[in-house]
Amino acid sequence: MNRSTRRLGRAAPGIGALLLAATLLAGCQVSDIGNVGEAHLAPVPSALALKIDRMGMDARSPIMLRIFKEEDSLEVWKRDKAGQYKLLKTYDICAWSGELGPKKKEGDRQAPEGFYTVSRGQMNPNSSYHLSFDLGFPNRFDRSLGRTGSHLMVHGDCSSRGCYAMEDDAIEEIYALAREAFMGGQQAFQVQAFPFRMTPENMAKHANSEHLAFWEMLKEGSDHFEVTGVAPKVDVCNQRYVFNASASGSFNPSAACPSYTVDPGVEKLVAAKKASDLEKRATVIAKVQMQEQREERWAEREAAIAGFFNRARSDDAPAPAGEDAATATGAATATASGTVPVPRVSPPKPAVSSTAVASTSAPAQTAPAQTAPVASTSVATVPSPSAVDAETPVASTAAPDAAAPLGYAAEDDDAGFFNSVAKSSRGLFRQAGKLFN
Image (cartoon, rainbow, N blue to C red):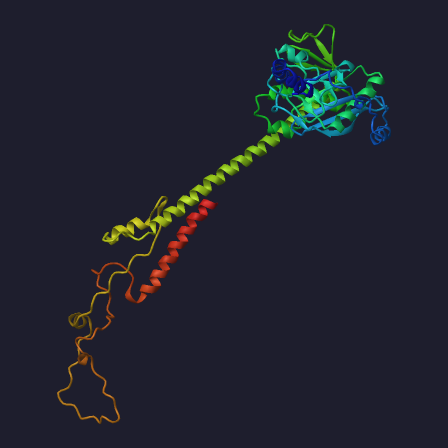
């Protein structure tokens, strides 16, 4: 809402309400009620005038503007003495409303995109937004599609409802440059409003947008400017923009395009740039897709690894009390990919009785009936096998009983257990390694 509307709203509530509704629908409304200041007469700053001279430009040579929404940039290009446009200065856009994409209807609060022409009559020194100029929306292309809207401006005051708003100092400089160009004989200057810089990277970034076909058309106009260094001639036919075209007939925005030609040299340059940019765009898209696929594969791999170790921890949990040992052991060795070896529990060592000793040991020697007495002070008596106390346990040296349960030999219990644990761990890490690889 502009300043004069707010004043009228306080003075007459009914009229103010009507004006408020109209303003909200119309976008960045302007007013001829406010006091006329001197801002529109401010000269081009001396530093900028010096830069114009250094760049080989006349102070009153034609200008052209380029707007990039996503980068919040407004560029002023000025024609040099050789007839080529060069970038004079880039200004920050303080605010623009809506999203990337064209303006379609009154009240959607979208800032326009397309090719617009600003004449002297569209300059407004009395704007409620410090200074402003009307972009001329809707143009012939917009009208051919039934698009509606009004008062779409570039202005100061850093407030936007469908406009491109600048800081006051910036709009003063832009306004002064336009004023000098009009005084130098330029009838109108072109404004190219883009969603973003039309690079292969940005086109790839927004390749899935519903506005892609429209932006491809805008890019063609951008390419014409970039390969020629001259603001392109813009026509509209068959509801599309046509650039630098010459035709015997007239261009009707809503009718089929007449037979037309484009300068072969320009056409060749534009075609070469288009082919190069499409190739670069395809490369960027392919890289993005590869990166997305890598991220998906890595996410799947992480999930598989996490699941593997979760199952391994579950398998290592102690069996419930009273569960059969063999069942618990079998459950502990099951995994999703097969079986993982884990150490078996050694069977309990059987108690050695006197009968077992007798049956597995060598026959006892029969002591001689008469033995000579031996002095007890010099030689220790070594008991014979038969003298071994029958109740003393004796480790058997004979082969293990074939009927005994399988397990580790008694003397190898500790070593066998740790070897089995090591083998089991190696198996776990080998399977985890396969997942990582």
